[in-house]
Image 1 (cartoon, rainbow over the protein chains, first blue to last red):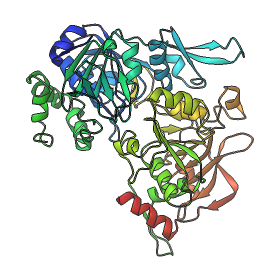
Image 2 (image 1 turned 60 degrees about the horizontal axis):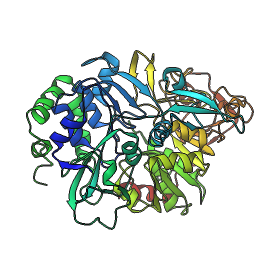
Image 3 (image 1 turned 90 degrees about the horizontal axis):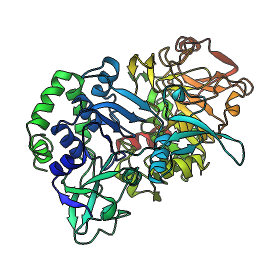
Length: 283
Length: 257
């Protein structure tokens, strides 16, 4: 059974230096507060996994928490580049970042294989692209029935899977709805899991579509607005202004480092960071 | 920059509007279209509001048959989920729906495109020491491989229309001459490339992209100068039909909503 605890204690117990850590949430329910807490506790040498590294991974990479990244699309959606991600890859700042690059379809298959207890997954794709040339976890396999050559990708089994959901019930079951991404696969593929939630409820909202039972979750922490600047369907909207502002904050690493001190290292928790973010405060 | 083009009609339109309207016209009623944000999304929504009310919109966030009232800002906007016939996981959208052959048309963009319609969204320069690190492949390789056909929207200039890609992220007609089929690709590849200057389509035999249409006011020289290889021009080059008053009105109403 999961403990309902603080995010500080959940990260302290379950995320260790050198771990493979997956924070998932596809445009919706991105576990940003958990990313901040990992930075705040100064975890190092992480192998970060995420289909769409966006602002939260830009922050973690810029803070020097990661030495490698497994991903399929890294950008600031609707805005442009991730500047900390780019500076790490192009210039090795704050230190070099090795990458293991896939397509979305490949990443989804890797999580499914991991959740299914298989060593690899199969898909039709990658041939003709340059991705297999640079990514060791892409190979080919021959179908034993038809002889067709198919792409094979190794399974992903993170040490820790971290997601954000709308609700937990008092028994520690997790309920979420709206766009569901690969959260279920990421949790089931991981050895341990942390879920941040908007609130704990007596009974789930009728809109809940995905339920992860308590016994597959390691720890739960209540973090209202913990997915900001992404959104939580039924709770708050995506903060499009923040995505645009991040472009300015992250463009120069001195400005980013200043932000990092003020908003992460000098704060106790995510609520303090939100309170300092002008257009969010008082919402 | 968006240029204002002024012609002998009372209709003034931007290059983006021309591209969106050409893309919209390519869609037929009932088509199942896999779209991304920007011109593809706007074009598909325009088609749904005009000549193709039964176009089915699918976004890679897992929303199927979604009917947004305004162009979404991200593929994961809440309205896409609220107005969808079904919301499925990302694993399912790529396996059952895209790889399963349920998508008629995939819309794609890129940083670079070559004469075969292959796309680069990964790096400019060397992979290990890139000059510019781009976002990466995302869902485009699967869309390019598995949709029955693809449509590409891309502004035409020598930085984008290159002789040789720095990296192939998504396969178009590969090396031409039917080589795509030998890769085992399910779909037939790019059927149209819509630029700010005109329209390119693959040659039926070689599959090399050919300029088949120029938008009103644009010239062959502009198309040639905007292309990093010796662009072939069709013997039957036409002028793109300009946007009609009703197309422009519908597009502007959509964009302002």
